[in-house]
Amino acid sequence: MSDFIPVNTPLLNGNEKKYLNECIDTGWISSEGPFVKKLEQEFSAYTGQKYGSCVCNGSVAIDAAVRAMKAVFKWEEGDEVILPDYTIISTAQSLLYNGLKPVFVDADAQTWNMDTAKIEEMITPRTRAVMVVHIFGLPTDMEKVFALAQKYDLKIIEDAAQAHGQTYFDKKCGSMGEISTFSFYANKHIACGEGGMVMAASSELIEKVNFYKNLCFSRDRFVHEELGWNFRMSNLQAAVAYAQFERLEEFIARKKRMGAYYQEELKNIPAQLPLVKTAYAENNYWVFGIVLDDDVKFNAKEAMEKLAQKGIGCRPFFYPLNKQPVFQKMGLTDTVDRPVADRLYARGFYIPSGLGLTDENMEQVVRMVRSIF
Ligand SMILES: *Cc1c(COP(=O)(O)O)cnc(C)c1O
Image 1: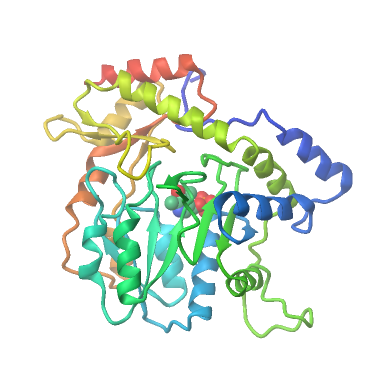
Image 2: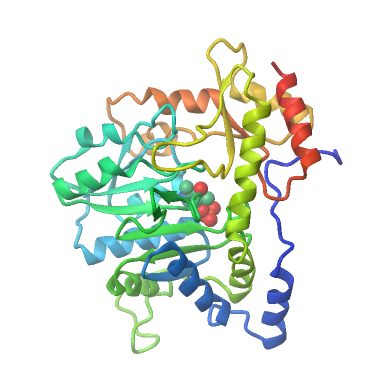
């Protein structure tokens, strides 16, 4: 179908080609190249975090971050980290790969972020950290997280993959914890196809990340005390990401305009739309989610099928982590109900939200979304 509108279309019409050509003309194509360093320094300075380390995607960024936290703060096998139930598998999986136990907290029905009022009941003597994940364009309500971190001596890990440049009051997402992670996947605000970054407040943490992402090479090259993968980012990826970073503020403004347009045009459909703002942030609509009202006769899956037939690409919301078959097989079950996350999966999906959408595309999306009701 030639006029199909995909759920994501990146916008790559800045300096991407120019910088890629520079890599090829100079021969700097590996992770040793200058764009990697520039991106690390400038994106972390912009974010307000001291150190940055580029990696090859946002999932391994979390893995390296968790491993570094475990080593530096001397966490033990089976120690626990609290995180949202409503998020991507990369988060919980990184904890498990590193011998830690994920503990899932239900979502807030309005913001779709972790319901921070439900964190404290999940804290045990083995809890070491809270991993916050800013979802879909709104930051997590950090007030409770900061208070609990203080009260129980917990660390904060931030997954800011969907929140480049977003702020909680005046603090940038990715600057509020000991360590934070970003993804530069094709649908993120800064996109280079595949890519990611870890940021940390201490040199000790970032040195650990640099060690783990690089085969655990030590001072005597090719002599290894530990095992680690190659998670390095190439200068080619960094060149594209850097060109995107140059336009981040413009991209965020564009996402906000797109979100405002969808809000206005879809306000009468029988569904919950994203919050426009909270006390601590304005939505920057990384993606535009829709949660069908209970009296709508079809569910999210059926809605997406209807829209696909009309040439509109959509994506489901996350499947609750505590219900993931792989985690159930591993015996990671408990008796806690998480009704909000369950409902978000059953009733929620998101519509085309990429930076490359034209005004005509968006008008078409609106027409087709309205038409299914
Ligand atoms: C995209 C994303 C990731 C994973 O990033 P990849 O680069 O796709 O591996 C992790 N966490 C969140 C919240 C994401 O949105």
